[in-house]
Amino acid sequence: PLEGSGSYLGVLMLSASSAICSGSGVLSWRGVRRGAGFLIAAGSLSLMLGLDDLFQFHEWIANTQFGLHERAVYVVIATATLLFLWCFRQPILDGAPGWLLGALCLLGGSVALDTVFDPWIKHMKPWSVLAEDGLKWLGITCWLRYFAAQAASVLYAAGLGRVRPEPSTWGLANPRDGKVTA
Image (tube, rainbow, N blue to C red; front, side, top):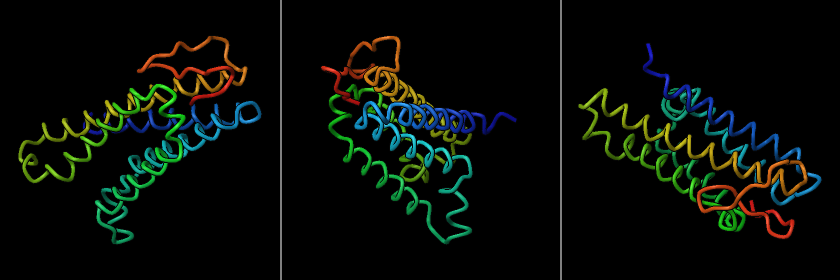
């Protein structure tokens, strides 16, 4: 009965990430546009990832309804993610990219287990499913942690936060001289 619980928790965390980013982006739009645009784009990307996982778009709907192979959907998701990373590379690098890098590595590992290594590990079920879902869940946890910290930083820089974020490689971005770095 708990077989899909990791996936459901991942969808909830991606939904939370989307809500935090989008809401913070809208709230801070008038004060800090650079950071607000970053958060709104991150919220949109999180929503896309969450809906894909919730409705099993890459696994089932894309193939049965649109005739697309699962790997084609992965290419679209990877392209959207790379486009996001490219467009917001400076705020990401100026901020604290450690958690985002961890999220991308763990999520990439999950995709690799699902696509590249599946022929060799599928006989090890349920361990192969646990490994794939475990990497995905840990990646989504890092994703939520990173974007929640960036949202707090942007809100603080916009004058909407009460607690000054502390900078670190793995933690919050450091707004310098009132400029948003996230």
